[in-house]
Image (cartoon, rainbow, N blue to C red):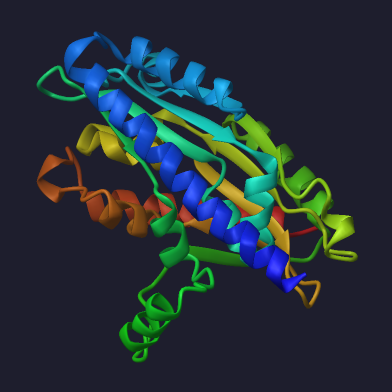
Length: 287
């Protein structure tokens, strides 16, 4: 079993890296030669992924969302895609990694009119979620670099007093009542019973509000890769259920949001978003 899991993680890393490099290489070539718009770039990536056996979970048009609330944003779309077996191999090792799944490609038009591509490579997932590394040299280097502590991984956790299914149901009801858009709910580990006993299947709620997310993308479009926001509901080995979400401050640092690009106060904006997410999670944790 251990050797099987090791092999699956290695295959996930190698395969995902190869796919990302291939698509980025092809996309880079087409960006300057053939791709004339974000729509064309998105169509190209979707077709490529589908031909490679990936499932397209959703394609979210951030510009359309901005227009729906009378805000401006250059063409920006994010493609969410998955391959269940590869995702499952990663989640069984590190359940919190599901917070960065499904995988995503962000396609956007920058201020110069060029078509840009962004993606989270496997190295980001491995580093952020402390996925075990089985290469001896890399593992030794990792121990040396982290002997004095690891950097904050930007994940906020709230304990739930309900089961995974009940927590998801409560969160969905609250989000709908408060007018959030919910483009997808993703259930992971469809075959978890074969490997994990009574482990409850993690579920991911993808939700957003263009009035909140658009100002962040106006600051730096690359943050659209991590929007809309997500709630991951999972149960740990001690059977405690948690709600996990990305800390907005972490995302702001990751995407280099600038205070002088915010029409208001960026710190206040991020604090308000954090408090809102925390309030939603705490409400969803209650029966």
